[in-house]
Image 1 (tube, rainbow, N blue to C red):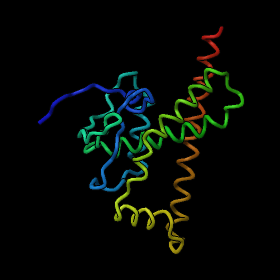
Image 2: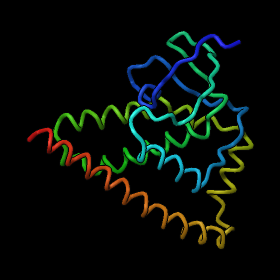
Image 3: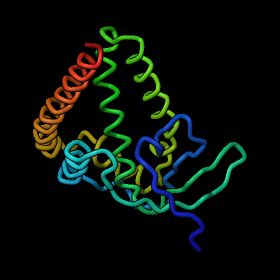
Image 4: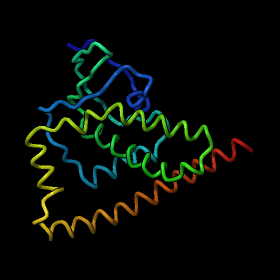
Length: 180
């Protein structure tokens, strides 16, 4: 039985001020999204207005003594991808930390805290997911596939880095206009 329906933003989900922690349970399918899915979500995030509907999440309240633990039972691929996107953005912005003003450094620190709050997502792999992860990422005896994947990923990484650089540039321009 559905007890509540909330309209929650991505910022609310990853907020350090929220007592909610989102977990992806072990029984959920492994992470399967690839370049096309990432691209579609990235475009949804960057090319639409604030409040754009990114899709629904269905969560079950598993309870906790120190706040609410919500298990994501639908939308876990999108949730995981947003976590990865925010992590990539954090890593890119952290390279510019020495050039940031105090307010921006505070925002960067908050982003780090928001990401750390939801680290259970990455640690909660089933044995099958761990095996799949090792097959895809770790095994060194698949040199041909790795070279092909590296080539594709490098091209995509360069494109995403350019888009993230552009987002950072636009952010810096907006901050400069606000100060002016």
